[in-house]
Amino acid sequence: MTPATWPREEPLDERMLVVDPRADSWRDARLRDLPRWLRAGDLLVVNDAATVPASFFAATSTGAPLELRLASHLGDERWRAVLLGEGDWHTRTEDRAAPPPVEAGDELRIGPELTATVEAVDPLRPRLAVVRFSLRDAALWTALYRHGRPVQYAYVARELELWHVQTPFASRPWAVEMPSAGRPLAWALVLELRKRGLRVASLTHAAGLSSTGDPAIDAVLPLPERFDLPGPTVRAVTEARLAGGRVVAAGTTVVRALEGCAALHGGELVAGEATTDLRIDGAFRPRVVDGLLTGLHAIGSSHREMLRAFAPEPLLARAWAHAEAAGYVDHEFGDACLVLGG
Amino acid sequence: MEVRGTAALVTGASRGLGAALARRLAAEGGRVVLVARGAEELERTVAAIRAAGGEAYGIPADVGDKHAVHAIAGAAAAMVGPVELLVQNASTLGHVPLRPLLDTDCEALESALAVNLVGPFRLAKLLAGPMALRGRGLVLDVTSDASIAAYPGWGAYGVSKAALDHLGRILGAELDGTGVRVLTVDPGEMNTRMHADALPDADAATLLDPDVVAARIVRLIRAADAQASGARVEAASWEAAS
Image 1 (cartoon, chains in turn brown, red):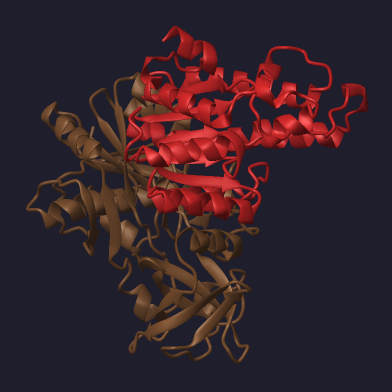
Image 2: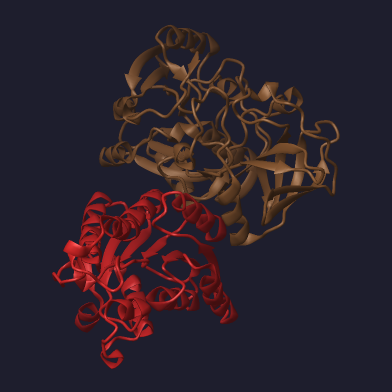
């Protein structure tokens, strides 16, 4: 499939492939048609994580350049990070040079007021490190926003600004890449859904990096991710299910948070923060989520594997072949796919 | 709206009404993020709130800067969680001393609109959405009687505040039923640096103490659920009537 190379003007005009496992069929639609495929009593759950400007250019103490991409927040001023060699997003991640060798104790200089000290380097995967920033609290966040750029990939046409990678309901900066299923959910659509008797609720899930250029790291993605499930969202899920409504996740991160939470608590949802390492594939039986709105993920990717928990592979394969032939576009600015039994 | 435990963001918070509001919100148990352009003055205000036992964080930024708003919203939510109360108090007069419109540089009008209207629009756009999904929130924009009365010399400021009033009305209407309220509050004439810049010959004894006004606005915040969303409220007459 061809990637979308830039955000489009009118998200509601973007295409939506509707895959109905119950009817064993697929249909072409547009995002603005979403209310037709949902019904009163359904609950749409979105990820309200804002996207951190997670890419930083830095130099080692000997002046060797590198790029540091934040992968997950470990608390306070500590982050897990992926290190890349000289160059930037114009080069495909898998073609990027290896980072200069670093070891625990090395100081990476990011800006006049900001350094990151390497605390540990993964012995098996030397691009994966734990760093500690030199600032704390509001001063650290202000500096991260000053020096960071959005993580982006070589298929994108130009340098992205931070506003290109935020969903319409972005709140806490927990995601290092945009939770992109929410991107086209314009407020006009959200308010229309509510008017029709659907509920829309949020959770926060720390969406991680989708690619690191290191096959050894990419093979284990997604890394464990943090989420926060608000009490009102737990109640909305319970009420929707009791009333016979469907729980529709806007994006794979929402599936991971809801099913990850249920997996931690014997099938029940419990409000609060936790971390999940759940991997969802065709063998997984969802306990909370009935379907999802997502992107047209590449066959073989962990996101695409997740869809097999919601629809059989032969149907997905047929739908994907159609999307390919019909000119759908993929990746974070691409078209959408709704996998939901009618 | 209950202030205790509420995540609040106050712009123009290093001095005057903004600082007084931040102090009072923190004293009542709010978790407050203060935004202002001047880092040093901001840090002093934040330090004073902390010394008094309040929870406060400072983000030095210009709300009129398009590139700053995501940093403000993101850093604020990182420090105190999803923002539930947004107080948009930062303003600029345009030319000081004030000038009639025919002498007002186009750039001065543009910068007044950037700080007093477009910045608040951008921040509300970023923060009111998550509030609506969570079903709770208040956007409180600080306006002025210059948004209604046609005071000669107050052109850039008055135009921007009139537009801010209407921004609040429309946003309030659009968010009706979501649990998010929008209020625009006219604090009255206060003894602040901005007032001295605009009217240096004014008798300070006739002006309100910003801290007295802040106390009044905090009472209005507590009573916000009883206000029509989108309403423009004069702080003094609201209190007299309630």
